[in-house]
Length: 327
Image (cartoon, rainbow, N blue to C red; front, side, top):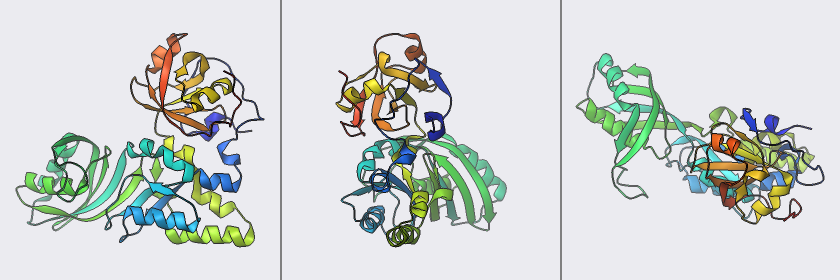
């Protein structure tokens, strides 16, 4: 049977106490029956140009005849690429995905000719912390905001067109970045084309078109073959692979599912990168996502202390009666 380290992306764990899981309760994410898998699934949609993100998610919902589906990280109608779509119960993890880093490939058009060397030098000014004013047509309040650009690499320059790749903090406006880039060059510029290539840890290489999704589901219904559908739909746990994690004992799961805070005594192991007061994933020993929490201690403190509250629950993901009540 696969252990947690093989199910989850991160493998560097600090063991707090030895614990085993009871095979009678819960289920390894990749062992869920297909209907449960769908209703706890995540799809990396390759959003086409044209529809809104909301419409694209609604189309996925309708393909599976589900009650609800949501998406993380809105893309404008004219933008293509990675759009995480969450099905049924998986919509609960949207807060974790929204906060993840984003990666884009952008084609920017400058409105006057600028020497390539000057463009390359200016690009260096747009890494690190920058200030942005959200666009006029935007759902958020228009006030100056600080965002971080982790990298901005110029891929190609042809006449007045500049192709670049940017890895950014969530909430960064690439359209505004292009406008500000032009101002630094003492000209004007606009975003010509944009594609998102990564959201959190979800890459475009694992994305699928609406037609792919429809075909896989029809093949499953006609042939009772789950293979292609399982290739497309990931367990919701894939959506939290980019955030720190605490793995808890079976005996602690029911209390967490009822909203109780996580005490150190219930911890089996945790990742090394937990900081105080940040979003974390609370997982079972089988790799199931139990809840999203807010850490009240960092990794070193958790490892050092024998008592105390390590995290408070923000959102319960697992159904309450999955594991037996022991409290």
